[in-house]
Length: 180
Image (cartoon, rainbow, N blue to C red; front, top):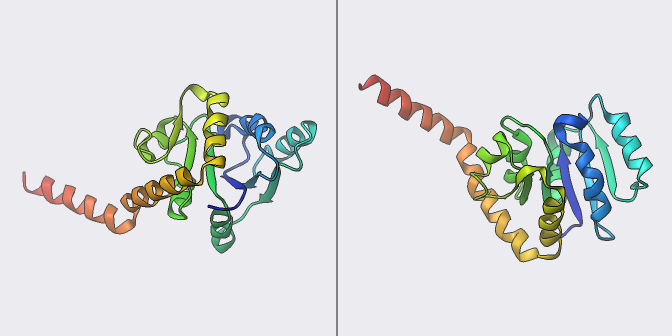
């Protein structure tokens, strides 16, 4: 939680993943802070052009498609994880980031709302309000105690998504259904 890296992981699809929101977020970053983007997709060139057109090369580190240990290293190198998706089912990248101990900031939509339990385990931003997103991000950037607190919330919540827990939950449901 001491680095000046903000992690974004996802397919590079501008509309769904809200990559256009990353531009004003990138513009707002204090010197030294960078958004590390892991992923590729059909809008990779458009996204790179947005970065270039806004002269933000010094605010973004584009890693491309990564997996396995390299992806874990990217999560582990960060201090904050952000999700700017306009819509999302169960965002696996959010739980991966939580498992690596990252505090989460996300726009409030179906998947993140469920994972973060309506904001109990991370910061949810309503109505795709980029200015509110930036304010919350800046607060985390300058407040290591809040990052540490939200790290604890991430690590607490992610235990609910471990395979052993899910198997036990399903076993309990099946047992209840067979007893009625």
